[in-house]
Image (cartoon, rainbow, N blue to C red):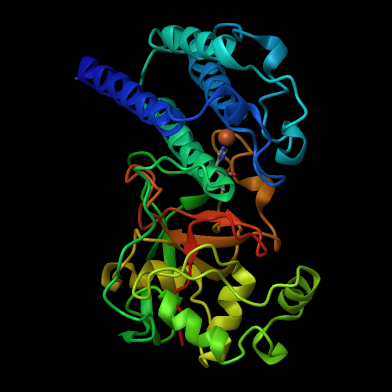
Length: 352
Ligand code: AVJ
Ligand code: FE
C-alpha cells in the first residue's frame, strides 16, 4: 500500500513537471528571463521558485536535509521577494536553473512519502504556478499555441436558477488533502437566493458596455469607480459572443451585477449552489466575500500560504478556469486576489 502511494505521487510529480516544461518549450531564454509585466514574475523566477518550494518541503522539512542552495532561499521566498521586484534579481537562468530543478528533484524522490500530504502540497503548488505563468504569458501575448480561452457555456449568464434557504456543510472534510483555508468543515446557512445558471458571456458584457455601464457611477462601488477613473477604463476587450467574459476585475464584476439589479454571490452561496451550476471550470468566478479564515481556522503547514492574506483586501474566487488543472480545482477550493486585478482567467456569475 505504502509503495503504491510513493510510486503514484512520484509519477504525478514527473507528469506535472513535463506539463510545466511543455508550457514554456516555445520560449527562448530572453523571454523566460524578462520581466513580462510589473504585476507578474519573470517565468524563470516561477520555475526556480517551484524547485525551491520542493526542496524546502520535501527535502528539508520532510527529508531532514539541508537546503540544496541556502543562498537562494530568500530570493525564491514569495513573501520576502514580492512580484514587483523579482525582475531585478539574480535568479537562476538557463542551464543553471535546469540543473537546480533536476538536482532538487533527484533528492525529492528519496524523501519519505508518509501520508503523501506534503507531496500533494508540492504538486498542487507547481500546478497553481503554471496557471500564474499562463496569466503572465497571455498578458505578454506569448501563450503556447495550444492554449485556448473558454468555449461556449450554453447560456447568457442572465438565466437564473433557484437555491432554497437552509443550512449545508461548507468546506473540506477531515480526510484527504485540503488547504488550511478550506477547513474546518462547518455548517453554514443561507436565505433563498437565485444564481446565474452559467457565467456571464461576452455578448451580455458587450450589452452592458453599450448601455453605458462604464459611464454610470451608480453601478460602481466607490473604490471601483475610483479605480476605473484612475486607469481610464471605459470598456473591456471582447471575445466570442457565447463564451464567458474573461479578465474582468472584481470591481467590473460588481458593476455588471448591479446594472442587472443583482449582486455577486457570497462564497457560501456559491459552494451551496455548486452542484447545480453549469459552466464551472471555464472561468474563475468572483464572489463578494473577503478572504478570511473559517471559524476555528488553523494555519497549515505555514502561515504564509493563506493566513497572511486574510482581511478585507483580497476577494475570494471560486470554480476554476481552462488554465486550472483538475487536481487543483474543487468545489471547496478558495482562490483569492485583489479586486482591481484583471490578469486572472476570471469572469462573473451573478446572484439575487
Ligand atoms: C491561491 C493562487 C492565490 O499564487 O498567491 C502559490 C497560490 N501560494 N504559491 C498565489 C500560491 C503559494 C496562490 N493563489
Ligand atoms: Fe508559490
